[in-house]
Length: 211
Length: 211
Image (cartoon, rainbow over all chains, first blue to last red; front, side, top):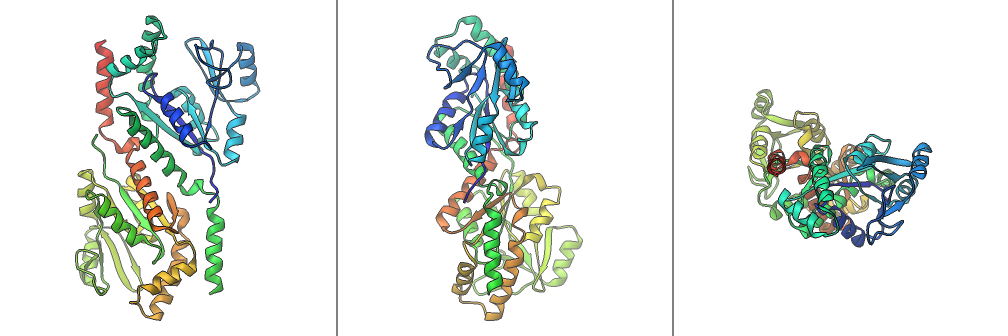
């Protein structure tokens, strides 16, 4: 049966596994679309324009916001981040889900938008802050002051856990990934996400009438 | 992590597989409780008092309703049916889910009660009315006029599909059972069904404070 694309918002403090889980989800279901954010920050080593982010200048970013082309946007550590609107609307019309790897500010804005009913939001928590710290350091690419900044942001991010539909504690990556798939599969079965149901009911009623 | 028991309401026209699915669910998760309805109708062959139904007299039933001991009740084909309240409340407090095999009237009443937030409702549809008819006849225990009555009730029952959170079309029992498990597993992960989360967040915040 046809279905309506939903918006899966994943938020978590940096290092809780959100980016890895997003990649696992995309590998598991090729029909899903990853919402590539636009940002004014500089690329990190290994990041490719159009894959992890659309890297744009500040005037370009401000132009997109002014033209209403951003579903949400926010400033973090002096850089702007935002989710382009057009690809999300195209995916939804196509019956494809979109995954957003965004923070609480983005989540709030999309939940406050006209797309609120299409949103499924999941917050990923680390099993402990000691483990979060360990995962951040194991990346080995950030300076100590950057890590300290991320940990401060993590505390603020975690304070928004109560705004999400689902909360998963990522103490085992495979189990958390299974839980995430379960949430997505169930949400796809919601009555209001199956636009083919009214036609199917009409066919059942026609059978009753023909008896 | 501890969790709060939820109320899983399964409704469907007679013959769509609801009772079989309920039995599969109970066999899969022994912690689940089946809400044994009270009824004034006579037992069918094989039915055991206290297992399929609590068989009570009409005055007994009316007494339970008058004392507020029924979560919901309704009259169907001249017989009364109702869900006793006390065992449901005991299961919830114990972190156990309760499964209700009830019709749209019962579903509406529980969703309109103080327990509305704890309800997950699933409507099971047959793949076709021809198949529904075949399944009803294969039971081989009902007279032709009883079957005709059930089919008329089925049409009325199906008209309430739009009141349920999830809709499953039972064209393959194993797949529908898997879908039902997926819905239940996802709903258990909802933030507001995990009462241990606030304490867990406090432990994370204590870790931040101690840094």
